[in-house]
Image (tube, rainbow, N blue to C red; front, side):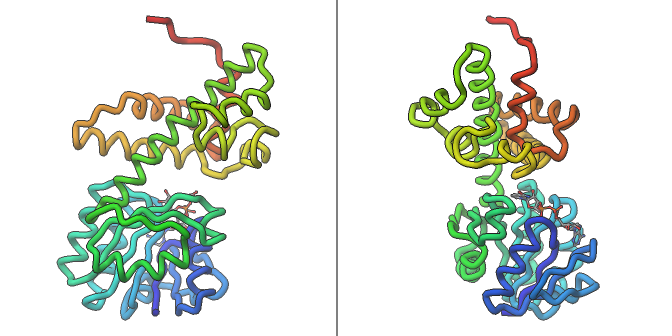
Amino acid sequence: MKIGFIGLGNMGAPMAANLARAGHDVSGFDTAGIHVDGVTSVSVVADASRGMDAVITMLPDGGVLEKVYAEILPLGEPGALFLDCSTVDIVSARSAHERAAEGGLLSVDAPVSGGIGGATAGTLTFMVGGSSEAFEKATPLLDIMGKRIVHCGDGGAGQAAKICNNMLLGISMIGTCEAFALGEKLGLDAGRLFEVMSTSSGSCWSVNTYCPVPGVGPESPADNGYLPGFAAELMLKDLRLSQSAAEQVDANTPMGHHATRLYKQFVDNGGLGRDFSAMLPVMAETKREQTDD
Ligand code: NAD
């Protein structure tokens, strides 16, 4: 297939490289002029969209996506696939679908989970929203870049699933950090506590797979000075998306709200550029604030 790939950052570059390695003819564009091996670099966005069978975007947010789509959708041939893998707000995602449909184009929102490691290894999870026809056309490409692909529903459903998942992840990481920080103050050995929690009812991905304690559990960013991994500011971005979505549909998300506040405090006070699990040392040093009720 002739594929245009727009946004060759930390995630987009390895995803585009995997498509090229699988034999597709990939043209890449990034405003930062990034070159990816095996991908033809183009200097204007139109050259990564006109005449393409599929155009993939991996951009920072919904504002950028809407701006880029305003330029590239009019260049798409009827029936071409527009596949957005960025994490964006649901309003932008739905408006992207509407504008694509007006031009007779197929579109999916397909945000990812799995981070830079998953993008490089081609093992991402894709949460997909869009029509069955668009999903079927996207699947062979998603299969190259990922290992698990879930069709979550109509346009915007992929973004909805992504922010629900990441809201839970933010909450569970904070809970995990709290439990280990409390355990330490109660004199428990972190390795023993891991043995208990990872095999008991407290087990979850944040404990079992991504343990925030250095030297405990499988290797994670905690063992690498809390270099991301998944940066705290990206977690904050996703938590904020969850809160604006919750506001739109009047959903009560008290834990999501609190997690957003805690990650904002963390990012504002030294957490920027650190892994989101680096909440543990902060929590371990902080004195008790709340009063019981
Ligand atoms: P990044 O900042 O490394 O990459 C974004 C790229 O988009 C940059 O290279 C930037 O130059 C380019 N860009 C910005 N405006 C552009 C424009 N108008 N035209 C073309 N290119 C433009 O970010 P990333 O880590 O690759 O993340 C991309 C998306 O994936 C984000 O929506 C993020 O939330 C999501 N995501 C990231 C991770 C992760 O671990 N990094 C995990 C899951 C999802």
